[in-house]
Amino acid sequence: MIWRRRKKELESKSAEIDPETSSARIDDVFKMKTSLDFDLQEYKFLSKVTVLELVFESTKAKIGHYDLDLAEYTNRARDKM
Image 1 (cartoon, rainbow, N blue to C red):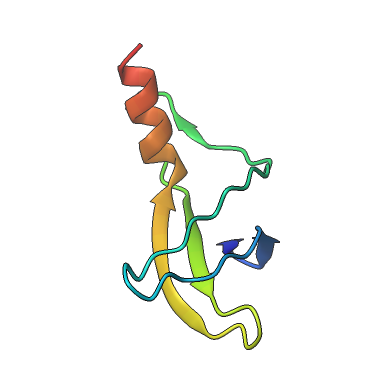
Image 2: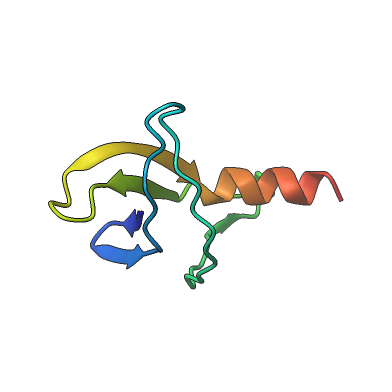
């Protein structure tokens, strides 16, 4: 898998896709430093999207992707405290 934010990119371990379930188990941990802008009037973090992209290892052709808004995730986690 590849994590992308603008031109920055991180790769994680690869895994084979199970043809019966069309899924792959990827057991990996990696870190990416980031900063989030905070709106003092709204008292929340401003949107910052990171893309999780699944690609074929050999050709880098895209299989699928997921957009993760780090601010939305952080705001929800903070609100649960």
